[in-house]
Length: 218
Ligand SMILES: Cc1cc2nc3c(=O)[nH]c(=O)nc-3n(C[C@H](O)[C@H](O)[C@H](O)COP(=O)(O)OP(=O)(O)OC[C@H]3O[C@@H](n4cnc5c(N)ncnc54)[C@H](O)[C@@H]3O)c2cc1C
Ligand code: FES
Image (cartoon, rainbow, N blue to C red):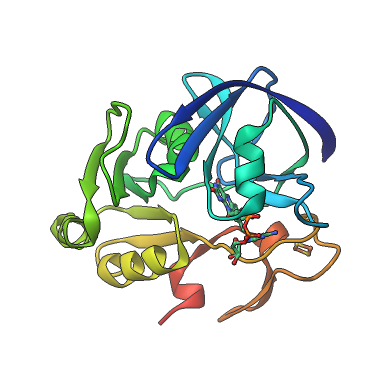
């Protein structure tokens, strides 16, 4: 666990509110690990999943409030990490379902695990991506229903999208989700990110953020 500065290389707009930021610096991390980024808009740092974009360290940011707006405007960011437990999928064929803001995370996972990737977006992406992309809720649900059996699925996006995906995929393979609990310290010290699971209380910044869907939902 380190404190460090990150220097923005590229800011790539993906949709009207989602961006991908690449950095000059590099960092070793495992899939689903995240960094806590300092902003002047809050006393706590904010979590962002680590990924890569064509070899460069990268994060995706969906602008939803003052902290995320600040992050996409900066050339330099202060952060600590990598936080969280790395995700290792089971053996076999896998598929990832993600929103545009998670593109850097899934780009990295696709290269590591050679799995299929599906992006669900509310609007057309402003850049070309090699992953199948569906637009709108109806197409997204139709895609999930059309997917054949896989050995595992990994879903990363909003809580609502993850729950819908879990319900539609749970009979087709093992489903893992990256949960979006509020994080304050990111290192297991504040106990703020606790969630009840079928296997007891888990602190998502150290036990997650990826959990099996069946641990949290029926
Ligand atoms: C493990 C993890 C990884 C994440 N990775 C990404 C990512 O790769 N890209 C991305 O765009 N977003 C990611 N998020 C969500 C991101 O951290 C929040 O969107 C961001 O903190 C919002 O800050 P804000 O000031 O813009 O919004 P605010 O106006 O402060 O809050 C808006 C909403 O954002 C969420 N939020 C705010 N502060 C936190 C916090 N400290 N921890 C968790 N959620 C918070 C809450 O749901 C809140 O209602 C991740 C969250 C978690 C838990
Ligand atoms: S965020 Fe502090 S214990 Fe998890």
